[in-house]
Length: 404
Image (cartoon, rainbow, N blue to C red):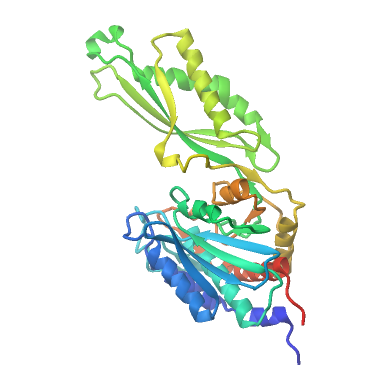
């Protein structure tokens, strides 16, 4: 009895091995406070592919922080990139052992469980499943596990500098297996308000920087935030601005000479970092024209900067694009139901692949983003096996199975 190719793939993948691999990756710390950060987990990923007989290699975009790649298929077109990241945020106030990989009530717990070592495991096993089943592809799948996504995306930027060309990309961030076709752009801004500090008993002779910040916030609410709410992308929603942090002054009895306000600004296609910065600067200029004692400057926070000419861009993929249709069809074949397209609420390396690589990009992975970075980060293990099958089906159908 002849076993169909897809049946061979399904038979070559097990939920148990995906879970075991996810636990293995979680057990390897790869955050910013770890020496070498991603190196050990990158080497573990490469070791997996070597054991499976899949071509793999490491490249270091920045000293000691390698990207790890694997390739399946000898053809050149069509080429599909599967992209994830190997770094995590630090454990912080994680409840329990962040590296134990404990399973409780159907959830796998640990730092990186959902963001995004389980997704890496799903894609790795998907590639291995195709190899074990003897599937030959007309095109090729390039697996890329990148460094520094939680930082300045050095790994993704190095990938783009390499001249990579692909016909489509999947970024395995947690979407609950909903295919997301884009996200908003992102930048962090800091506004410094400068007053004239004096003893609190002579406050009328000084200028309070905290008061200046309050005046700005009041005007911002009136002049800009309502306008942002009206700027809506049909899928991505409105343009947004969040007050994330404010600090000012030195003590209660001194007129505050300095106040810092930090903002998170998310923009939609049609806007740009330059346009949102100009809006903030124009508002500050109007306040200064009304009152010469109003002194403030706005700048991009250093922690938000990447390299010159590269920003956290917004992007949106048309649902009619071949990759979008192919992803939806793979989900339908595996889950037996259609998953409507959505928008990813955070930023991802997909913004760089789409904006600077010109690569049609879909964000798709197991787990819920709301659990990422949290003290109880976890992932529903029932999503791991379906995610791996969806990736395997997509690799086969987008890249084309050779027929003998």
